[in-house]
Length: 569
Image (cartoon, rainbow, N blue to C red; front, side, top):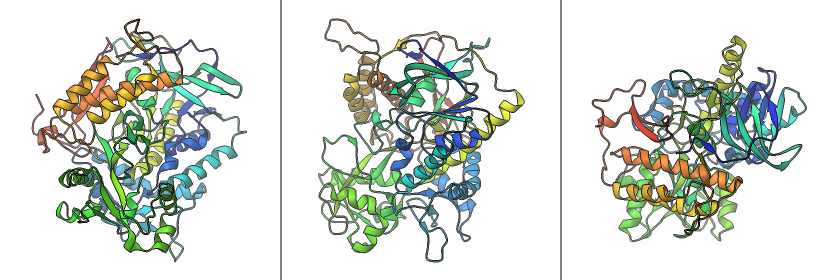
């Protein structure tokens, strides 16, 4: 596997004390925290500041704000959803520091929905045993959080301590000389391609002793996803190429209730928030029968993997490829007020949430794995940090508890920024000049993306098997990885954004397929039809990295606080 992208040499250079890549909740939080703690922070975003994945989050942020709730209860719910693979220390950090981070969001201007007594209104979602979901605009929490944080960035744009580069696709993490022990060199910046905006365009280099990857998830690896078009796994792939360790890559959360628009629908699909079921909506099969009470004690509010798998099975049992969401009994006025965004988006497809049954089916929604970090966001590459969906903090384990994702971005981005400032002040982060890494450069033709997505959807999709995963592996291995495949019917690839993104999609799909094939059990977001039960020997993390020759290596690693009875052969 390639250790860098095929791209022109940088034509310009900018220097900073820290670089943050991404403008979702994690990236914006890290940038705001760093602005007052280091002399110069550079915030790089693939589109505009307002285009991060956070804006699409509907449900809310999980935090213990009700005096009758407790952090121990939130911790317990998170551990149950994580299927035994959470890092308990990371979850403890999440639930104990989360309330303060939410209140900090309020101080930064986020306007959450309020209860009649003026307190922040709280609701419940799947897997939670208490009302602890903070929301805004009914079902537009992500949009409100993004608005508030972007406004804070815009307010300090003229501050010399922060610089924003929009329309910039990060290509690779730059690294210094490798260590004598063969360990990857320290991160010292990134290469990026700016799409003709502002004073810089084309490929350039941004240099800094600390880099925070907050680039979001991997949704475009699949044919159908709730993720925006820019979710092409850029940060995860760049970290892998730089020598970082990835973890829990096989655990993909498929949201149970995504608007079903037919078997051939692709791209970003409309999510029907779990909060709709939290308010009392029911799931029916196409014969009109409710089925979740027989599946799980929490019925429609069971953890998302349970609901997603139950929908797939029930649809098959009724010779269908979807089920129906029934919210009609909740009342038209309530639904329009509580879920205005969902209501309007469904109307665009001719469906009235207040009077119609809504066809739904699972689609890719969230990635529980990513770049392995410690509790301060540090990866295995010195100077390289990850936060938000691009990171594997150990919080989610095999399956994310509803609305823990925005909270994770808040908590661990805050921690990463403070760690960078502390290490920088202590002289532990040293500037280095980048060196070219050994290994091949890759460029996958954009025209092959649909083939990659089909392989990922059919292989490491909702239901997986050795047969499907091996077939996907073979397809991915045949996808061209050089610029010109020659005259034997190959596709020509040119160094440009579509090709670089497709290369990232291909590399992430390859790692996802390899780890899903290696884990011969079912747990959380990973379900193997040929190994349908969880096994204690698999209570571990699969880590993926590139060896010195650029080959992908997948190895089992113990989890902090988790003891396995035996290791897989």
